[in-house]
Length: 234
Image (cartoon, rainbow, N blue to C red; front, side, top):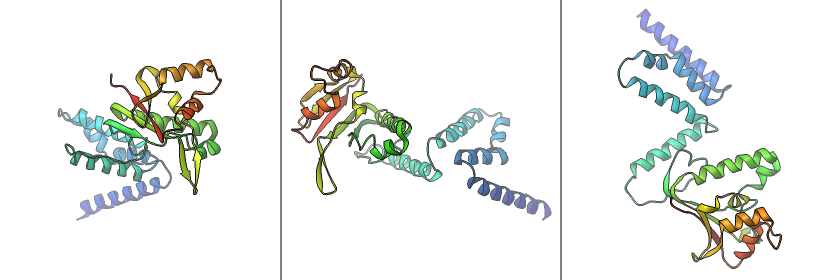
C-alpha cells in the first residue's frame, strides 16, 4: 500500500541520516536528534497523563548521562554493569571496575588502590596534557571518592614492581587534598601512621623538616606495603 510504504521509506531515510550524523557529531547530539526528529520527545510533551512529566525527565537524564561518557560503547558497558549489579542485589559480592565505569554507581564501601605519583595522577596524562591532564585526573579521583556512601579506603604502595625491578613510590598528591577532619592514615596492620589533619597542616606550614607531606608519609610507610586512608562515617 502506498501510505505504509511512504512511511517506511521516510523511516529508513531518518535512520540513514542518524547514521551519517553519528560519524560526525557527539553521541549525545545523535540521541537528541533521534528524540526530536522521530517525534518521541514531542509526543510526551503533548501527553496529558500523569506519567508524561516523569518520562520527559528520564529523557533529559539519559541525554545528560551520555555526555559523561566518551563513547556510546562506554555508556552501554556502564548500563550493563548497573543491570548486572541490580540482578545481584542482596548477594555478597565485590565489583571490580574502572573509575570511568563507576560513574553513577554507589556502594557502602569503596577501595581505591594505586594512589601513587606517576600512577594516579598518571605520568602520561601530565606529560601529554599538563595542567589540563592533572585536572582530568583530579576529576576522576573525585568520581572514585564520591562512589562511597559510608567509607572509602585509599591504598598506596611504598614500592612497586615495574619492568622487572622494584621502584619506590610516593603517595598521590590527591591524598594531601583530602579533608583532614574526615580521614586518617593507617598502615597495613590497621594502626594510625599520621593523621590527615596533621598531614594537611604540615603541608601548609612547610613542616619542621621541610619535607612535603607526601614524602613524609612515604618515609613513615616504608616499613609497610601500603597505607590506608579511611573516610569516617558522618
